[in-house]
Length: 284
Length: 349
Image 1 (cartoon, chains in turn blue, green):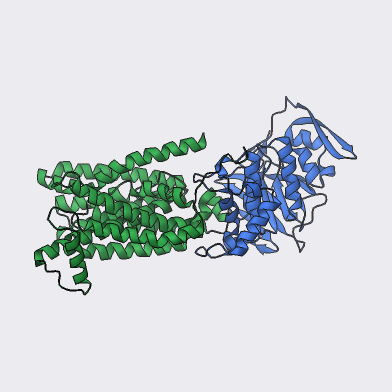
Image 2 (image 1 turned 90 degrees about the vertical axis):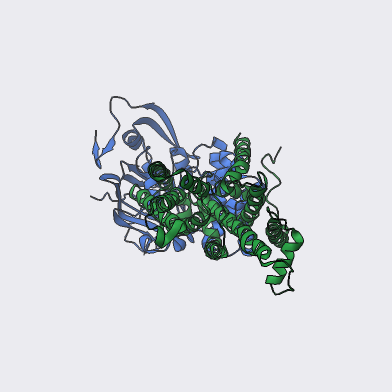
């Protein structure tokens, strides 16, 4: 059963999509985590993946990145099936930033950003002057130039995310996948980070928790619920009190102002147990 | 304070390029010094004379027996120490990066305990003793253990922590088997001989060992160095490596097999020499940083120099007796290891 994408989204068969999933499902044992999700992302746009915890946002991102084999369905990058591409070819055009990236070794920020150049040269080749220039440009774009000689382990959460974004940019991606990039960041750093992401000019798909941030920074949003697309389209159409009540179980007001869309949460809706997935079926 | 985390490491690239020949010179010098140390009264001048003669120089003027002590006993032993030290340190670097575990060492894959079981089986029970000998038995044991670890690791999910857990399980299993065989089959003298080997010893080194170990370690070094960028990609884990263009499953299997093979060959000639593979990679990282293009050669050379000196020390400290070199590396390695842990605690504090 496919849940077709709704308002504003292009149909997956349309040509010229940057990245698209065509009825993609992913199951762990017999538990469906992602259920026939079709999403098509226009080149240059920023798409937000919304939905409560466990709705399949991170899993969908992993499938889009080709990191997990789909149980059924196809992920296409610029029309080509990702599962048929080499990891290196994918890495040369698609970069991923995780919620939180940790390491046991002790790299400098320069080392971390330099990792972004790996897909562009042989594993035994030394870093070229060109690699260094691109890494430095990426660092400058993400305002991390002053951090280059710091140890990654000593950075704050916001700084680490910017460094990871700079690493992603050093890959020179046309597609950027971000998994809750603003997690653990304070308000100012959340805004700053998303400004930088928008300025980066790559086609971006990002999982987001915050509906206000999604409304402010995304061209389109896809709302996932129990692994399926509930609704998709421009944020001002998708983000409505009814959707918030149904998907998040929260009563909210949505205000449309000249400065944009604002969501005010009022209270958690009780007496109506949250929807959960069981054996891939929605139960109440 | 804008630069709280800045510390004056890794040294710059030009400095390191200049240091490479120096490090190699130190290694050659260390081996040369090691050939002058021993119970016989043969000093630096004699050693030099013998080496010159063997390299086509004038006659050393020493008796064949004395020449033999230098050329057939001391020199292969020192060179084998260098080769084993290099190989163990290299395996440590690769496994720590690949398994993302700073405590990983060449023996984490169960290779050394498997080798012990194989060796003990051959020596004490005589199974296949005529055909393969102690080293052969050790090698077969190592390969069997590693095969088991791989199988167990991949059957249970194939993630790095599964591989480590499988290694721990295999280590326990084969240690128990070794103890069982020793208790049921050994007489006192045999036990002593096997124990000496189990603790790591280079005392039986021959040129044949040097050639076998040397070629395997050389090949392994070439493979790992060629995979330097790939190893870097594992900094933030497997998924991150995949998003940086690495075919994780293929590469991990290749590098695990290469390191296991190196370890198996080293262990089967020298016994289980601990702590070199655990400590030296950390020391190398402290000097040149985390990039494997520099880290791999640095750790290799440092490991070689380290084991040459420790092996030399193990022959001197309780002369005329010899300390098993594995005991010596542990005695030096444990304090070094504590220092590393303290350093890491300071960093995370």
